[in-house]
Length: 223
Ligand code: DC
View 1 (cartoon, rainbow, N blue to C red):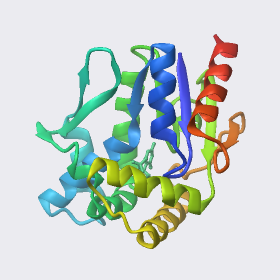
View 2: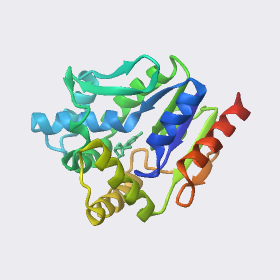
View 3: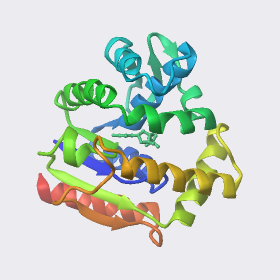
View 4: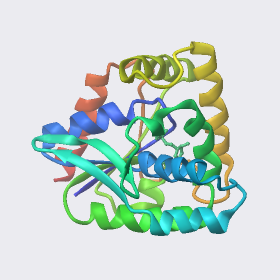
């Protein structure tokens, strides 16, 4: 079974995905981490963000792996081409690099194929931007999770503080979120948009627990 959770950054997709997966005994797939890993490799190799051919080549050939820990639905690490990039993909530099990289159709094609392979192997909560529309259009549950810009920036600052990586300046994070939303929503290849059959949840004035409960209820209804 696939539970697709799409929405803009900072809406709470990651926290909700992990807890829903823990409750239901599913695994989690963070597709944003895969785009971030390709962006990291591009920066590392000095590949220009205009070079669609070279970016596609990275996505097709550098293996992205998630490190799992027994009993934990959330992977404890991510690597690309054998390099551990768990922390390195959360920096502001990669926040900036990932939008142009994820707009390249050849990159998307390669990563979508990998995501489908992973998800088809078990029960997954898959979070991203195009999961309900492109990656798993037949997902049993589709959620489009949003929140106000301010609520999302506040949560992202908190998350960055906890992770010890990324900006913790509210205004800077807010500006980045607005800029990234614009790029993610206006790109030609799989722009961020809700699937026609997705359930919309606005988490601005909800606790994470309320959102988790609602997604679990949707999943149980679909089982
Ligand atoms: O979820 P995130 O913020 O870690 O995602 C990083 C970037 O990757 C985001 O700017 C949009 C892109 N992305 C995408 O285009 N498609 C996905 N399925 C997941 C993420």
